[in-house]
Image (cartoon, rainbow, N blue to C red; front, side):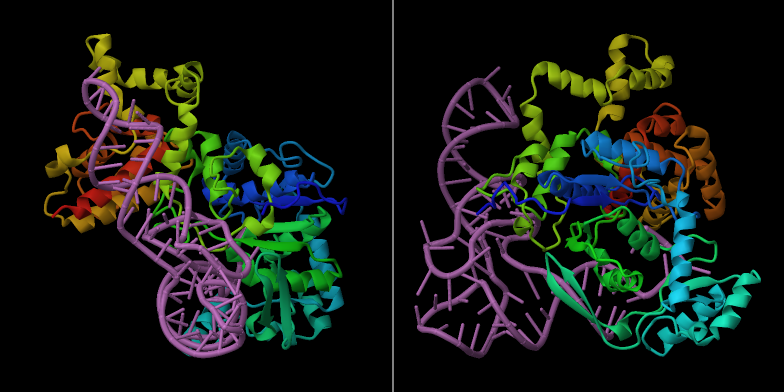
Amino acid sequence: MPGHSSHAPQAPVRVRVAPSPTGDPHVGTAYIALFNYVFAKSRGGAFVLRIEDTDRSRSRADSERQIIDALRWLGLTWDEGPDVGGAAGPYRQSERSETYREHAAMLVDRGSAYPCFCTAERLAELRERQKAEKATLGYDGACRALDPERARERARAGESHTIRLAAPQSGVITVDDELRGRVEISAEQIDDQVLLKSDGFPTYHLANVVDDHLMEISHVIRAEEWISSTPKHVLLYEAFGWPQPTWFHMPLLRNKDKSKISKRKNPVSINYYRDAGILPRALLNFLGVLGWSYGDDIEKFTLAEMVERFTWDRVSLGGPVFDTDKLRWMNEQYLHELSHEELVDALLDWRLGREHLVRVAELVRERIKQLNEFIPATAFFFSGDLDYEPVADKLHIPETPNKDVKKAILELVERYEQAEEWRASELESISRGFCEDKGLKTKHVFMLLRLGTTGRKASPPLFETMAVLGKELTRRRLRQAADFIAAKK
RNA sequence: GGCCCCAUAGUCUAGCGGUUAGGACGCCGGCCUCUCACGCCGGAAUCCGGGGUUCAAGUCCCCGUGGGGUCACCA
């Protein structure tokens, strides 16, 4: 039975999605954003976007922009965020360092945290030893025993250190998860988590709790992978003397083999689905059907309808497999209800727009004698997965086992991740560097790449082609090709 | 391995003590039709196992088993 759509007035609902700008906009982010958005809207609350960019080595410059664009593309708009501002800003954690430092100091003063001078090397050794002895993993508390006065002096003198949580050594920490009930974890399971790194930036645990409190987040809706660190967060709320938000841990999206969804086994970038021609409303609907049900045997519903019907008791906790077949079917449903005009608009927004066509034209103009050759010459720019059967016998590297060829391709694809920008010159230098490192002939590898990305042995210049094809399609096709090669006998 | 979460067809799910276990994707067959697709009709396929509780268990409890997550100066 669906719940009542009206609710008694109560404390304002404020929720957030807090992606880390360390890569491509992830479908998991979209999934969690959807549930936050829908819950907020169903309760007349606010949906906040916060950027968790406290890892200065992993954060990527354009990632925030991409996340914002992707979520906007989906239509999950936020009331407060780095781009739109808001009363609780800034919404970028890198701009809130002072706040975290103050709060960490507060905890040290209260004895709830302490400076730790252990080096990364010592910690690595410790971990190794614990692993070897099959002992419980975790910090051994060496610096906890330090005299507080003395420790403070060392810190003040500029000695490199972190701030660690002084977790209780006995007792039980309880987490009340709205979806799972009470979860109890014994204190022995929780080690003295680093709160402030030696570079002065906070870890997720500190930043998250401080921000959620300061931003008056009422409900924390996040993925299940966080559930085991929630006790640490509970401890922090207690140490600060703050009320806890209400916890909701949503199930994790899964690969076909049921493991946590990952790019090696499944396209996870929202941009992939956009480039593959999935409509935002279809992707949203599909995500809405994973772990939640509308009721009345209805599966096709809009965002607004989901908002209207949303209740937590319709959430199911089994980790849903991200079934791209069903997503395609869902997309078909929406595609078919577009008018002819709307369909053409969708096509134009996709890859048949002027901007994209100009880039494609540039690559094939020397290679066509008549306009009517354009479409056949460029078909692979507008296709999904390719059929490698016709070029199967050419998909190989001389004297190299196919499974090694697959490994090499996958490794190269990984290297492309590091490209600052997805452009030809960079792809070429990464590829050449790769061949050199592996002692592979460029002509062999480049042909492989050509066949993998275009399905043909003749194509426009390889790296320009890959650049125009885009990161998502290129990566997808190369992975597909690698699988195809390994499956050949 | 420790701890935690989860468990209805291959997949997404409905079910909230009494049902011929419902819907959807995918698959198979048929109809429609100049072909294909759409659409329509039909079909195969599920309660992880074992103990309890109960007149009655897919539904509640316990134990297994299986899957997953997590154990970083990453989020």
